[in-house]
Image 1 (tube, helix red, strand yellow):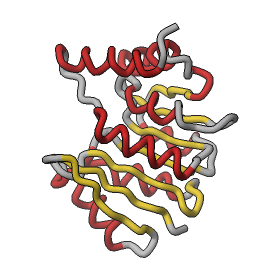
Image 2 (cartoon, one colour; image 1 turned 180 degrees about the vertical axis):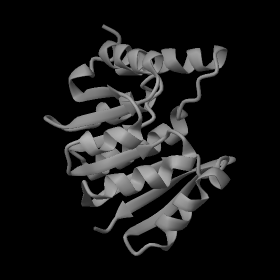
Image 3 (cartoon, one colour; image 1 turned 135 degrees about the vertical axis):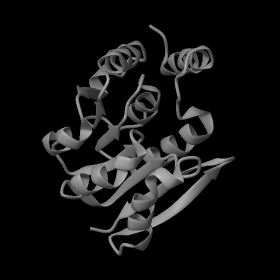
Image 4 (cartoon, helix red, strand yellow; image 1 turned 30 degrees about the vertical axis):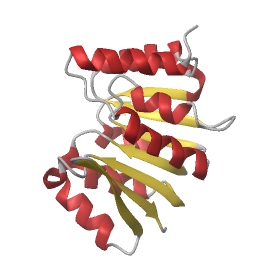
Length: 184
């Protein structure tokens, strides 16, 4: 069975030949560090694509902990499930097919970690739906806070000005990730 590392490398190679935006190594290291340091037990990923980030999150979750991925595309959800299985992580992740705006309410909390990496204009909508099931101290990572910041302006304004979050930005060249800690 391939290791999670070899599956990540395969996805990286595939991303060079087909339009397949992935988090990549630099942002991936941040995600893995946050998951390792914070030790969440229930993580949510909105916008799974082929499971690259799902592998990064799932392989750093503790025993008995789980990632719930929400993906709109049937093809991408199937590819993510296959990649998680190939990485030996199928038992740590569940991919749910459908619109995250409708599915978030079906996720059982409390949520300790969330990665928002789907339609940027919907980030604030996703976050507000997650708030009712997030644990105090939950970490929310929003990808695209550099290149696509204009598309997520309402989200960025909300997490940066609301007393419900302590928020900072991590810059990666011309892109960034917004890291927010839910205060409750």
